[in-house]
Length: 95
Length: 487
Image (tube, rainbow over all chains, first blue to last red):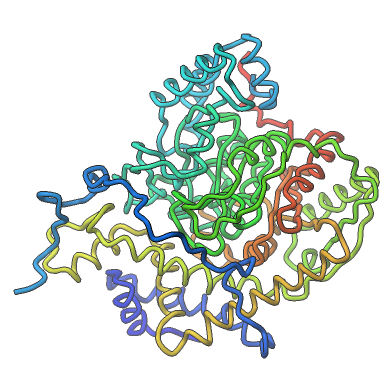
């Protein structure tokens, strides 16, 4: 299993991670090694085995559809890198 | 002072031998004196600690105190603490002030425990050496050139060096048990669902579980009992009564059946560690236990399946860090995509990026069945191995890590070799089982932990088994000379 530098760049874009050009080869090698390890799974017979998503096979609980949260807008927005009038500011999205 | 159990500290507080303010100041002074050598804290919260201690003293004076009132504690820096920076040891959250308390923190604060500070860790809990921290590596108190293990290395080092009497950590693939083993202290990861994950910054949600580091099993029992229980704010919290974990500590273990998986003693295990574990098992025989060889045949598949499931869940969880609502934002983004890419590229460290990309690839179109689904099927096989074993035995024991603490920098160029050292811890997280590490001896002049694996929700029995060992051994009482009590 090997992941080429071009594939690494594609994955990095999918994950929205900027990667410096000089580090691409290293990531390519590291990810190839990781997937080399992962491929040991192929030897395991898993026909008719149910995938396990939760350790106790529990289902997600549902709660009544009522408002429980109080309004803490200012407190929750205090960490925003850029804000104005109770809104998050981002670079221009539409021309 | 540093050698007292939490119950002894509590008695002294109630008897008025010293106040919580004095006790808390004592540990703050030890942090000031020693932490420059260890780097175990990211943030020391002196003001909050003393305010909490003052409250505790008032409760004690009014006779409304509980078993932990006035005893200070430290939190791994991924537990959200209201009004206090919660960094996850990442540049991404270097400026993040948590707007609420994690449920575990809330419960222990209500129990009257003053917060000493937030401990260092591998960034976003990804790592086994505590070298992946934006705030620098943590040192092992037994040898400052060596790692304390990870990812909860700061909590482990702080408890080992007696900078805090107790600390919380989290364990996604061994992050409580392995550092407890490498620093010679007691650590417990409870059953998945036992402790609320609310307010614990997520790494891999189906594996993450909060737990405790302390000097001994008795102390762990007190704190774990106080922080456990159902929480409606965590959708995977288990609605089940929490027994009094301290009640069973002194039960006899005569006739206990201990399963020893042969797969935990194969190639790669340090011979000194092997010897320590065999001697610990001999000690258990003297206590009346029976040793039964068992097999967990899919153990070798734990590493490959974990390194699909955990990164896949991480890539999803960490997508929330977008530079918009909180956390790091790059300078002068030209457009939205540039802002996302550079904020994340600059804000996350190398190991975090490696795991996000691993997970992104494993979940990408066309690969889902081959990787994520296959890994989840293997997870079932591993879980079934344990189910079958627990039909024959009461508890399972073995090593925690195949090696003792290694030198800082020794493995940084080879992430895979670090992944391979998680072989004995990962399978419990995949199955959701509880696990402990207790100090059982030394190899290569460094501490060695014995792993105790219990069946689901049997933390009380595990703590009993650990406590019985600690009644006849003194490994848990050892403190590195440099960090001994001031004369």
